[in-house]
Every structure is written in C-alpha cells, then in structure tokens.
Amino acid sequence: MTAVAPVQAMPPRMRRRRLVVLVAAAFAAVVVAAVVLAALLAPAAPEAPCPRGKPCGAPPQVEPLVNAEVWRSSELGYSLEYSGRRWRVQSEGPRGVNLSATQGDMALSIEGVPATEDDPRSLLERRLDAVRERTLGLDEDTEPAHRVLSPVVGLHPGVGGAYRAVVDTPQGATAPLGIAMMAAGNRRVSVVVVGATSETSENNREALFSRADSVLNTVRLPGDEVAR
Amino acid sequence: MAEVDCPNCGHRVPEGTWCVRCGHRLAGGARDRPGAGFAAAPTERAGTPALVSTLFPQLPRAEMDAFRVALAVGVAGVVALAAAGLFPVAVMAAAALVPLLTVAYVYDVDVYEDQPFRFVALTLGWGFVTGIGMGLLANAITTTGPDLAVDSSDPDVLLRGVLLPLAGVALMLAGPLVLLPYRQFNDVLDGVTFGAASAATFTALTAIATAAPLLEGGLRPDSEALPWVARIVTIAVGQPVLAMAAIGAAAGALWLRYRAPVHDRGALGVLGQPALAVAIAAALIVAGAIGQPVLPVGLWLVELAVLDVLALLWLRRTIHLGLLQEAAEIEIGPEIECPNCGARTAKHSFCSSCGVALAALPKRAGEEETGGGRTGPAEGGPPAEGGPS
Image (cartoon, rainbow over all chains, first blue to last red; front, side):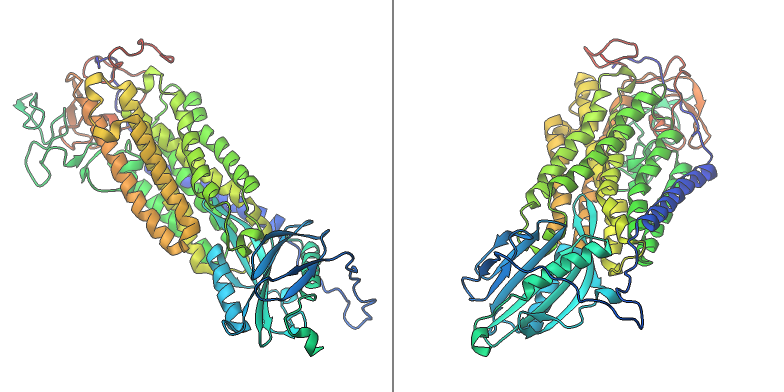
C-alpha cells in the first residue's frame, strides 16, 4: 500500500446530547407510527347478534352437507365427515387428520388416542403444550364472544377453551391466531380437536369456526352406534 | 519530539504512552502485551466481545458512552412495551432500534465521506429494500398461518431455517460488494462498516415486513408476556447483532483480500479467506435462524447470545488486525489534535496519548494533508481516483 492522501481525523458531527435526542425522537416516531397503525387496523369488537330483550329471529342457517367426504382413522376406528368444497386434507395419519379451509385461513386438526393412553383432559393439556411450543405467547382468549361454552365432539361432551397466540418464524413474529381446542372421548378413544384461524374479522372468524363445528358434529367414535 | 524504539513493531516512534504506528502500549502496564488493547478502543481488550465498540468502531470514546446509553434505554423501552402487552408496537420498535443507531453512527462519523448517495443506497438502502422483500417472500412462500400451529410436522423448517437465511446472507453482502472496487473505500474498516450497515437494515426490515399482519390483531392482544419479552430481545439485539457482526466480518475479509496489499492479506489467517469467511458468516446466521423452530424462545435467546459473542469476537479481530495492518504502511506526519482525547499527537494511526486508532475515528473528506496518511491502492490495485477499479 502506498501512502496517499490521508484522512484527517475530525470530531463527530453531532454533539452527544443532540445525538441522543435525535435517536430518541426517531425511536419515538416509530413507536407512535406503530401505535397508530395497530389502532387503525385493530379488528372491530364482536357485536351481540341479538339486541337485548328482543326476539333474535330465526336460528342460524347451516348448510346441509351434500356429498360429504368421510375420513376414518385406520388405527382407532373413529370417523368424521367434511365438505370437500369447504375443506381439503392437509396431512393425515393413522390416528388423525389435519384439514385446511379452502376459503379463509383456518386449520382444523383432529387427533385421537386410545382411551387407555390419555383421557380427554390430559390429551387436551398435551396438545396445548404442543401448540404452545409452535407458537408465541399462547394464552387464554378473554373475549367473551370467543368462549367455548359447551365443548362437545360428536356426541360426547368434553373439555375445551379458547386461546390466542402468534405464529413465530426465524424471520419474525407474524400472524395472530385465534385458537379453539376441545377434547372428548368414550371408553375406547379420546379425541382432541384444534381449530386455528388467522382471520381477525369477527364475521369471518365466526363463519370459519361455524364450518369447523359442522365437521366436529360428525365425529363418531367406535361404539357410538351401539350407544344410540 | 523524542523518539523511542517500539518493542512491538520495531519502528522508531515518538515517545508517548502508546506507539503511534501499532498501538502498542509503550509506558508499561497491565495491557502492554502486543495487541492486547483493541485498536479502535484501546481501553478495551481486543478479546472482549464489547458490543458498541465493535459494531460502531469509529466512534470516539465519549460518543460510545452515548451509544451505550441509547442502546440500553432502547432495549429497556421495548421490553417495557412487551411487558405492558403492546406486542405489535414492541416488535416494530425493537426491529427499528439497532438500525436507528446505525444510521446515527454513519451520519455522526461521516463514514460515507464524499459518496453519501452511493454509500446509503448500497448499504442502508439496499438492506432496507431487500429486507422488505425477504419478509414478504417469507410470508408468501412458507406456511405462516394456522397450519403451522396445528400441524406437528413442519414441512417448511428447512426453507425458513436454512434456505431463506442463506439467501439473506447473499443479499446482505451483495449491496456492499458493489462498493468494493471503489478506491476511496479501500480499508478493511470500510468493508466492515458497509456489511454491518446493510445487515442492520436488512434484518430489521425483514422482521417488520414479516410482522405486518401482527398489527391487525389489535394494540394489546391477549398473550403471555414472558415469551414475548424474550422474543422482543431477540428482535432488538440478538438477531441484528449476529447479522451485523457476521456480515461485517465477512465483508472485512473480502476487503482485506481484494483491497489490502498482497503481504497484508494473510493477517487474519484462515478467517481472512473470503470463501471461508462467507461460509462461517452463513453458518452463524443459519445456526441463529434454525434455533427458532427447534428451541423454546428462552433457550433460543441464550443460543443467540452465544452466537453473538462468537461473531463479535470475530468481527473485533477483523477490525483490530485490519487497523494494525493499515497502520504499518504509513509515514509519521505532523502533530495534530486527537479528536478522542484532545492531546497533541503525531499524525499516524494511533494517538500517542490515548491509543485510539485515528482511522477508527470520524473522517471528513476533502480535508487531506500531506504526510502521515494511510490507505493507498493495493499492489497491482486500482488507479488513484474516484470510481470503481
């Protein structure tokens, strides 16, 4: 290297105080912008479908299931039905199936275990832990409209709850999720169901969970025919 | 001015506390072993993974304190936002923290000299644009919705944890590499600064673009705060520091290989081999990314802290040896006032009073004087003026 024009060392351009003030101001601007954006984009609060003290009108219309696809667990023998127009199989195994909504962003996972392996409550806890590992900040959803009031899978009352979490990736935290989980079973099989959606619009969320309910109502465990 | 023989470099140098050529402590003391003091901040050891003096090496000591305070207050602020449940806001603020400091740094020390547009476009601007692209691409081509939460098999772990980070390494380096042929940017420290600046904005904008859907979940969504606090620290410090240090060190190795004199190119040993340096940077970035899907967020934060330390040590060594190598090429010039300590010192590479590397202090273009300068073209290198060679 040959010595050429030197670079004169100079004091920094900004005084220390001014530097800190500028960085703090820019940082505050980012915070304010994020607050404003989050407030503007926040979903509207759920509205009660019926005015207080007045007749609520006709019950909600549920689409009849026509040409429903049947999925059956090869290992545990339980089955469910779903509309091929509304759902597609994302992945499946001998004990369960993951469905993905064809319209709207929703995933529905149904997984069974022999009742001797797990009861519904411990199965729910185990599944909750698994979802917690795969998401960020899983916590109970305190919105009253999202509460799971009477968890039922097929013909079987069980346990369940509503939760919120965020999908996390190495590139960054991303979609907020609304999650509903239920588990139920009989003496032969325990089944846990996880429905998750990234839809933040209350109307879309309600429609998707309603479609998920339609699938859950069709779950039949081994021995259900005898019980009926 | 009386002169003494430096026991480290063997040159006759002006008497003082520090050698103006090699930064070796002449006056004796605990840190008078060759290379013990970090050339850009002689009061610190070269083997200490200090964050601010490594990522922002051209700051004078007093300014480093201001940056340390700003960083600490910023991290405390974003942690407070997360603890208060304002998660979307905390993510945006955390991602912006280190890039804001980087912008303040490059402006404060006038890194870009007389090429502000070119420098900003190909480092900060390049990282900004490609970071947004990477965030949008990641959301578009990988499973980031509810399927990821409910499906225990994760088909995209290779894509998100390995392939996209590798693409990120290539993008972060690509912008600064365009500046490599320019003669006015021929120091190892220039390469380090360009790589780190590009990485800072790339990492931040990737996180912001990826997190855009978070804003639709409301200002204070129900969520457990503790995992969020850990995640916010990864966004504010863990990931950007890793990217800046790894990419800065890789860019420094490239500058050393292609801009330094032939006999200086081995200064970094095997870590100075460009192919190996880029491979190590890529391995560090991938190791940092793959921890997210396989570890709980708290452990991932610990993993990132370890990787940050390794990357900072590597970058620090690159800066230190780069400054020492460049110093050996210069003739001693007239006395000047040290911008770091204010004492009079012979114009060369290190202040004889405080030991700071003068090349690691703010520069102003066009105010060149004769004698005692540094940085000419590499042997067989480019012509003397301006543009790419």
